[in-house]
Length: 199
Image (spheres, rainbow, N blue to C red):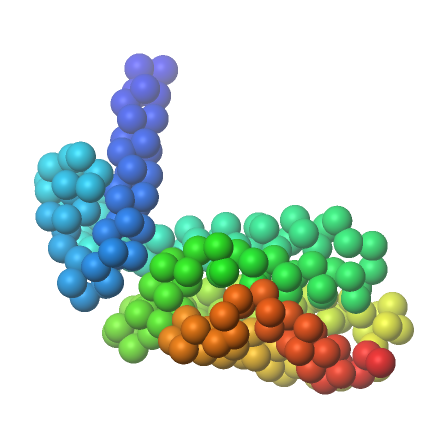
């Protein structure tokens, strides 16, 4: 097919723009980043950026969805290796903390800067939150079905679990406490386990 190489080049250019966007947003923050900066970082023209994205907001939203999908895939892969519901919960929690710890600038960008940046950002953030809450709820439903934890409102519990991890991560981003995000794991694990009725 004659158009395939052209489409592949177009996809590669779009991905190069997204990767440049990550670096520019991480360096300058969302508000101070310009499409010109992203074009220069991607070694393409401003028109080349606009061919793929109407504005910097569209780049940021595409990155937010891409990063959310990547994190979700990492969590699901870690959970798939675990033998039981408790081990799956541990694997998920550790994967999230380690991923954010290893990508602090990105975590700050998506967890701190994106909040309050406008209705479209808030809707995209809530969409990502809902995906993670649904994953946690499936895990809790499985634990209830297997008799590992007593019956509970798994949708509400999943939202509370997500909120706890999110708040601890945002606090770490803004205050540097704990010094290493992974150090929050033992206390978080204990609180989450007890809240679900695990001994």
